[in-house]
Image 1 (tube, one colour):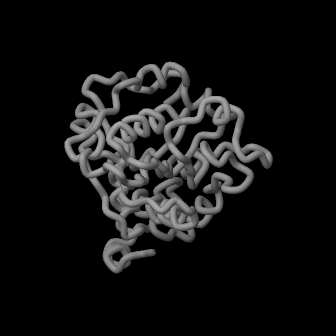
Image 2 (cartoon, one colour):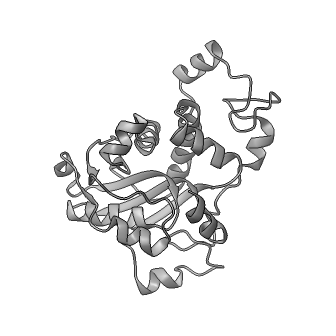
Length: 247
């Protein structure tokens, strides 16, 4: 799933040091062999059919049985730590998005192909206008656009929008994040194109599920038939409290 353009860029502008650790040993597409070995994958078996949380063989976890979310299913490629965390940070906060987006979108597409979701259209999780102005891009849309291209599916911008003035999620616990986002994800100016579609929603990190839930709620309000959420990385439950305190 490597395009000719990507191969040409690698040949003309080879990256000799790892974007994650700085090593020059075995670097391929910006990541060294050691860091690739440390990129731990999120399990795809023995997980909840809806939220993707490990369930020791059960089809659905207790929270999804008691209060099913508005999305049909969510899956993630990697655990969010080590080199994967570094990749996401480079893409999200340091403006170095080409190599991480290329590597992660390839993995997202491969995972999507292994799932029986049959999506019609791909969206990225929206960012606020303030974040977009400050960063200059939306990393979730970068991933979504590239993933859609690899899957041969249409990518739609402005299907959703995030309301101006939404408080940052940094430092908020799970319940606070859900409350903070309540009603903040709204239909975008192209939402009419989503009616009756099965949507593949792409994001960089899955943490508490608050963002996925609010996006799915808004998408169902646009008349979509199903929402499937695909994330590059997911924070493990055992590391969630530390993540919420630090990022």
